[in-house]
Image 1 (cartoon, rainbow, N blue to C red):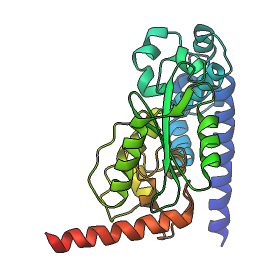
Image 2: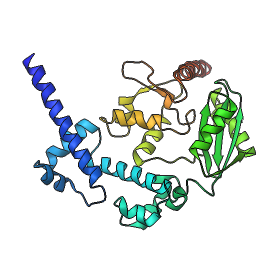
Image 3: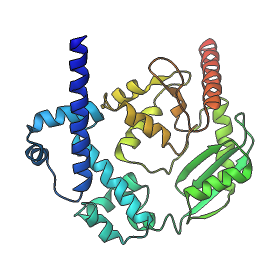
Length: 289
């Protein structure tokens, strides 16, 4: 019992330390921070600080800082802050570096993101599916949003909140993708070009989700291992929750370690129905082969 109490105390102290480090990283995010400078700030060896931080957060201090900087940059740009000023305020001194990889990091150039998607054409289509009413939205680059449930007005309002300054209208391209998504739900093999944005970690998680075979599931822990971050279980769950194109990126195939379903952006009922349908389709394929 005494050992258990000591263990709890040690975990509490480590959690408090990591909270202080996180606060420090956020407050000094525009500065040039290194693991050594962090260790000096907190009177710890860089190795120990890295190990404790990663053990609690599931990611390194450097990764945490990068995720925070990108989140801060998105917030500043969406509020209309000038691009160069926003880059400098968030610690990005090399403007060309962000622009070179802007599509991967932001889904569009910083200037476009700053305008809330202004100037971007987003087409959509709404129709029936085995999961109820379904909305598919696209840009010229591919599918950018999938929503399900509720009435048509509710689905459209959700799309407008997601792209507040884009030009949104019904689209024949989206009608085609909606038909393809219906076919996909019935087990047909369909490839969808995607136009989605996320952090580097989110993109890695979403890529891993697309590799989970039909009829199978993985735990959040298993997905964390797939992306090389076995302690980042909570971050994986957040990446699943942020998935803008569920059904195409199959976050419904991720469940809790104990086998329970966990949450799902389109509703746990739909998650259960999807998994049941996919198991049936996979079994039929095995019988036919």
